[in-house]
Picture (cartoon, rainbow, N blue to C red):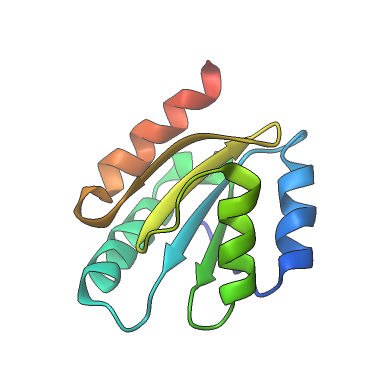
Length: 117
């Protein structure tokens, strides 16, 4: 199983976005008070059980724990905040995102195919 790390600060997020010049990352924005987000987080965990998930860095922003990082992700990527939400970042730019009920294991795996573009 691939693991994820939680992003808890704006500084850490900025550092990670810069690091995507070398290694892409998938950021999952999670609201721990939302049933839809809890379901999507279960799908994210199923995605982490796949070997393909190890091809990117996997991170979570729990919106209630780090509103600052969540807001900064919107500013850096230009993608309007939603939760649950997944954003794939490569070479400093968001190359894919989706949210809410669409977030399923298969969709997250399909998003990794955007890395070859």
